Length: 333
Length: 193
Image (cartoon, each protein chain N blue to C red):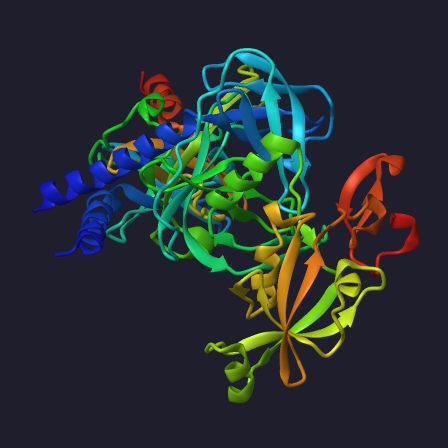
């Protein structure tokens, strides 16, 4: 039994190394800042996906796993998920394989990075938590994220989190909220697709502040379906799409273009992508009656650098995106 | 037996097999770290553990022996001690260059004075360290196995029970570095000639 058991360990170790090798084949160095370079992954034959916060200058150098160098330009960025898409000027990059299965808490994972010339770097851990929607300090919205106990070495931002078969589960970044997070691969790929098409991610804007409230049986009867919760409108911005569409404070939003809306995350998820600029039908309960209002969804503007609390500083100050607590003294800005 | 239980049992068997090779090295000033019996009567440890004066080695069996320092290479932070009698067995060595990134590694030592603790991680890759010695640049193994002061001088082993490195620089929370085993082998060869 002893020998058999030993072989099991050796086999496990080799399988792990194999997974690293598979993931490493599409993991590249992204040298776009003056400090330690960071990591990126192949999204398409000429596109590299990386973390937005590691791209700090115009000339971007990509080093492929085999050591060849390429120059690249940034074709799109999405600060609210901290992703940027780079186009490689000549030649091609290997494409990352993505996992079919959903990530699960407790699953063994490896984080990969290629921050320097020493080759691939890896570390092992488990998925600690899969978090629901997170508001990022950039005024952004991350609908799902993965937390792991993997050691993220310097330069791991933009690298993949892989499963034990070498397929990507997400993209690691530590520039989003100050702690290392992983952006789930489906979300990352969707952002990358939008960036490849138009260089940015369009997010819809209604101009309402909402709060989830339970719906009474009588209200559910009005809707004609069983729906436990709706969104009470507690504030409307002046001149916003919601104000123009006739929403009022006190309405309960229950549906968005035929889909039920039960919590703010639902609404945020529906506001991504295609709907921007289109007229949508909002189902609201106003007092006793059910109404359908038509609202033209606006586009949310990204916060400007100086509006991004608690990040202070900007190009004017010679450094970017330094995190500062709000009570930091004036001279540290 | 399920797979995780089998892995557990295998790890237990591995630790049981290699732990008699690990010793405590006391430097005569009350400090101690780990050491590894490289071949009978020869112990390899970290140079930074040593102090002027007499050194003692405490074996896995609990027996304390006086040790004589026969070779020190401060640049690679390794030292060779000789025991008064050929104690222990030779440990198999794996050329660290053949270890692929992502392989599981086991570290043994006495972190924070906790005797005979094991930690598991993967080989994270190579790091280059600048030294002030004749080599100039050193390639070190990096692992995400948690090491702490007291692990210094202990072995880093692959899953076959072969030594791939000697834990050396315990930088802090997330960085653990080890000197490749081939350098240790070269040092032992040099001093035993």
